[in-house]
Length: 178
Image (tube, rainbow, N blue to C red; front, side):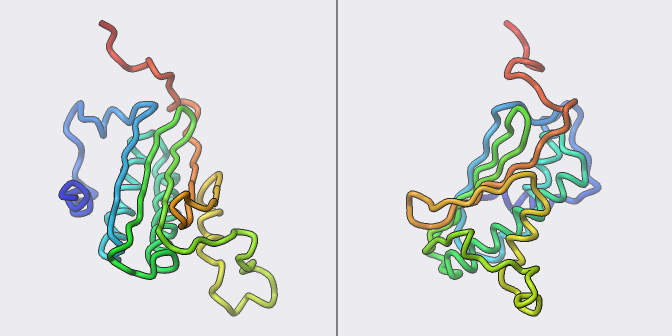
């Protein structure tokens, strides 16, 4: 938890140490898991962490920012709609650096929902309503959105943002051979 708060407080102008992991980039197969209580205080930290992971994975600055906005919205939805801001309920995040993409899965402990039942915010009868706008924004910022029911009963949203061709690596590239 201290690392999450440390990342959240870190200034944008601060540059990584020479040869640091952030400067080298994330490796194919890297994974980070977080389990957080349903507290709005974590939203900014999750946003910054998501952007930092996207940049470390080789996403362009604007693509890393888009990923972080989508994760921020999905995390906020998990806190408020999924868990009802019940601090006893947890939100689980899993960040994965894949060969061709960065994937972030967010799981809440709420009742769950069916994506097809969420009203289209662009249809004329919903233009003055706020329902469905968050999912609309998430879809617009990522390359793929997968929504499923979690085995624990809540919702599981997986957001995927493709990595640029030049940043993709095999499982062995960039690693020292012994």
